[in-house]
Image 1 (tube, rainbow over the protein chains, first blue to last red):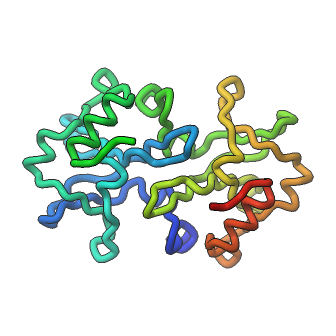
Image 2 (cartoon, rainbow over the protein chains, first blue to last red; image 1 turned 90 degrees about the vertical axis):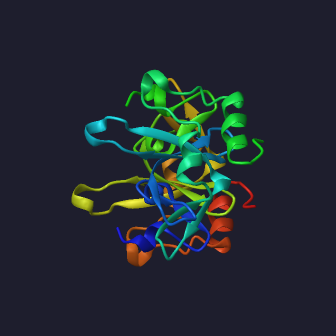
Length: 120
Length: 120
C-alpha cells in the first residue's frame, strides 16, 4: 500500500501515524507515536501516545500527548511538540502495565494541563 | 501488552481497533477494521476503513464506514454496523491504489449519505 492511499490533504490514517517520529522545536527527536487513544463514543482523538527508550525494553516509557499539542511537519516527516527534553522529563508518563494510568478525566486534566491545554 | 493498557471505559487505542471484526445486525461477519481515517487538524475520526476478501489479495476490497455507523458490541468482541450484505454490495468501496478515493468532501457526503448519516 503506497503512502497515497493512507493520507489525503485533510485525513491521516491511524496506521500511518503509528511509528511516526516526534520532535521538539529544538529539532531533537523525542520518540515515536505508538498509537492514538480515541474517545469510543465521539470518535475524537484525545492522545497520541509517544514512546521512547530503552534497550531490550528497559526504561521504555510512554508519554500521552494531547492531540492539540502535536503539529505535523512535512519537512521533518514527523510531529513536532513544543516541549524541551527537560520539560518532558517531568511530563506524565508510565512504564508498563502495572504503572498505566486510568485515562480518566483527572488524568486528562493533568496531561492536558502539563502541556498548557484545557481538557474538554 | 495486555488489553488493559489499550482500552479504558471511555477510550480505545487505534492499534486495538485495527483488526477488529465488523458484523451486521444479522450476526454476519462483514470484515475487519483496517485503520481509522482521522482529520489531521481536528483529530476527529471520520472513517473506520473495513476490508474483506479475498484469497491472495484478489478481490480484496476496502469499505470506508462512517465512525457514527459503528457500535462496539462487547459480547461479539467486534463492531456492529447496521447494513445487510446486500446493502454492502452497493456501498462505496475501492480495491487498490489506482481505485482509491480522494476522501474529500464530495466523497464524505456520498459515504455518509449511503449509511443515512450527514457528513459534517
